[in-house]
Image (tube, rainbow, N blue to C red):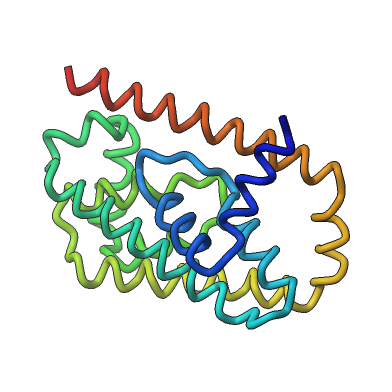
Length: 195
């Protein structure tokens, strides 16, 4: 079974695959823990145009975040309850009041398991300035993925030895299984809340 999951993950280890993975990872429906970070590290560690992969990941992520933001704008505050709990909504609302769009954009620097999509969805629903918010998210994503890419480039040989191990393949298989379960749970929640 782990062979199937690792084969699927390998599909995303290309430029276009990385872009698509990053876009999916940044939407509110798909649940792909650590997948984009792992893909950036693997691809950057291989040293072929290592600097390109963080940029592709940031671009894909920004597209996914923009879709999530626009969905939040369309839902508005009233429809937001289907996706974001009241406690998280109150927390984001207070952060917006305190520090605005740029500070919320800083959330894009935080590593998994920080749930960025609900913050972006809430930002859209609460009417944050789209241009400033998405610009700050894009800059933070470039910084985060570039830092990962640099570390992978520097420590690439050690990383690749570990990544090519059987333990890592099983770990990826488990994460992909969790991603499938998490995505299914997210989809079911959305469908139930629509009723």
